[in-house]
Structure formats: structure tokens, C-alpha cells
Amino acid sequence: MKTIKWISELKIGDKFVVSDDYGIDYYYVHTVTKITNKQIVTREGGRFWKENGRQVGAGGWHINYMKQIDDQVLAQLLKQKLKRILKSLNVDKFSDEDAKALYDYLLVTIIKKYYNKEPKWKQYLELQ
Image 1 (tube, rainbow, N blue to C red):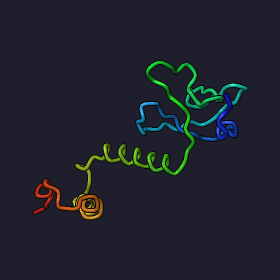
Image 2: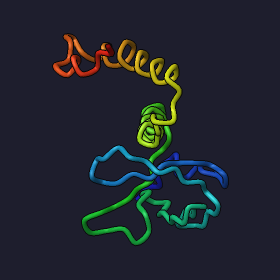
Image 3: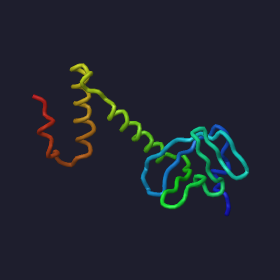
Image 4: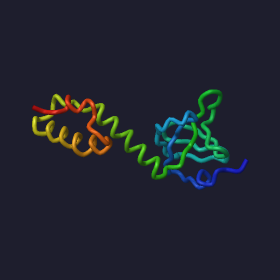
């Protein structure tokens, strides 16, 4: 089998993401620390076959594989980061002004942008 071109061009310090064969777009960034004749080794403890990008030892129902970082992957990584940030927000610690500013931004800029009509739950968002 012929090696995938971008994998054959990797150097120590280069980054790529690891995904799985389920089609779930959740990526883990790996950094190359060693390259052998047959494998790519990463700082994060991963070992991947240079020939096909599959993780060494992966098989059966779950296969992780290497994926080149492109604009689509960068966009997904940004969304992953945003989800982590939003989940970790402790709004009880926000000042009243910061809470109102975040609320206004989310409602006006984000939520309304993705709805063609007013969402059914809008009544619960209205501040008195």
C-alpha cells in the first residue's frame, strides 16, 4: 500500500488530529515526537502506521486514524473549545453588567441569527 502523501511529509513537531471511524467530528490534537520506518509516535502517547494513518493496535469495532489539519478541522476544534468554555462558565460569579452583556450578545447576535422565526422558548428569555 502506498503511504498517504501528507503523512509521509510529517516532521518532528508537526501536528495532526486523531479521529475515529464513527464519523464523530471530535478531534484530539497530536504532536509528532518520533518517526520510524513504519510508525509515527506522538507526545500524547499515540502510535500510528505511516502506511495508512491508523492507530497501532486499533481494530475491530473502533479504529482511530490520523487526519490532516485543514480549515474544517480548525473550525471543529474551535467549536470544541467553545463548548468546553460554555460548559465551565459559572454565571453566578458574573457581575450583573457582564451577565446582561452576555445575555444580550447571545440573544441578539447568535440565537436570532439561526432562527427564521422567534423560537418557542423566547418568552422565557425575556428580561423584565
